[in-house]
Every structure is written in C-alpha cells, then in structure tokens.
Length: 135
Image 1 (cartoon, helix red, strand yellow):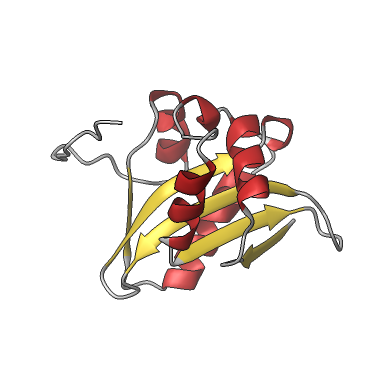
Image 2 (tube, helix red, strand yellow; image 1 turned 30 degrees about the vertical axis):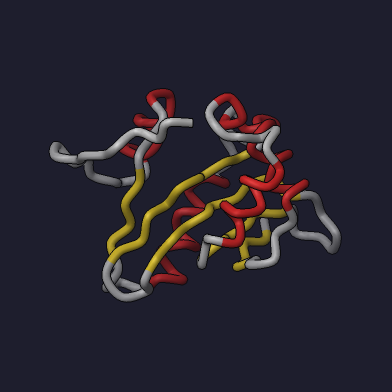
C-alpha cells in the first residue's frame, strides 16, 4: 500500500471513496461545490493507493490542523472492498507521522467505527461539544 500526502486530490476520487466506504450516507456526495470546498479547506490529506503507478484511491484521511497543537480528522474513509486490510490503521499512522509527536489527533466517530478507533489505540473523550450543522 502506498500512503502519501496528496493535497491536490480530485473531487471525483474523493466522492468515490466516500460513497464506497459507507460515509456517503453522511457526507454531501451529491454536492460537488461543497466537496471541493471540503478538500480546499483541508491542509492535510493523506491517501492510500495500491502500490503501483496510477492505482485507484482506496482510502483517504482528510484533516485540518495547525501542525503545532491539534489536528481534526474530518474523514477517514476506506472503500468497502479494501476494508479489514489494515488500511485505516495505516492512514492513521501516516497522519500521525506527518504531524509528529507534539500534535494531538482528534475526531468524531460514526457509531459503527467506534470499535475501530478503540482498537487503533485512540482514547474516548468524555467531554465533547458541538453545534450541529443546519444543512
């Protein structure tokens, strides 16, 4: 598997991996301008591709960070056909490598993925707050 920082990830590949991962049910996959804004507003995008030239995207981690204190992992998506192969953990590891040891990694999990994040060694936080988006 080839993990790399890919800041110019195209909206079509991003949409496809979201849809194929199951996150398409909770992401605006039919709203191309919003997907473009999500990508352009991210300053750390790590991708997973099969280890060959021109290989299709099978996973993505999309983050917003100051590279100093905190990083918010907005999406960790792996295509269903590539799940259970360690790609999600590999994406987490590469994000952490890119950030270095002085940056905290924070995320909000969909209910079905809570066990994955616990097995990956992440700690649940008891106190989190948010204003839910209106649309």
